[in-house]
Amino acid sequence: MRGVIFSGLLMAAIGCATVGKVGVNTDTYQTWWQDCGVSRPVPSNLATFKGQLTSPHSALIAPEEMPPKTSNVKGVLRVIIPMSDACNGRGIMVAELTPDSDISPAAVPSKAKYKVTEIDPSRWGE
Image (cartoon, rainbow, N blue to C red; front, side, top):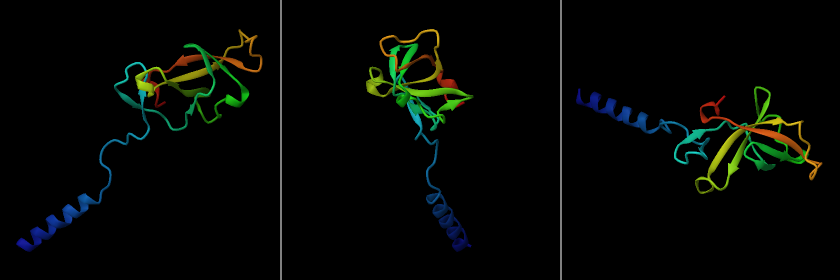
């Protein structure tokens, strides 16, 4: 009887040892630039912004800096904007980019102007 119990416990221990990672996968987590303390999951299809922020709510983007078409949610471009001056350089903003046809940048005619709308972290996973 003891041998059966011991072998059962041994098999259970071996089974637990081979399960692998336990817990939440945090590989896609990044730090929101406004709180610096809580990391949140960011979808892997979002591209990193390569244009020029002219203000927190507008950007200039050259044709070669445009994010790929796969970096969108519900038909709107969504990007990760690194905020190098926040959270020791680790903070990011997730934002939607929509064309701003009202204003054409006279100084940089080859770049298009976009409105930048920050996305609340609760909506990052949409």
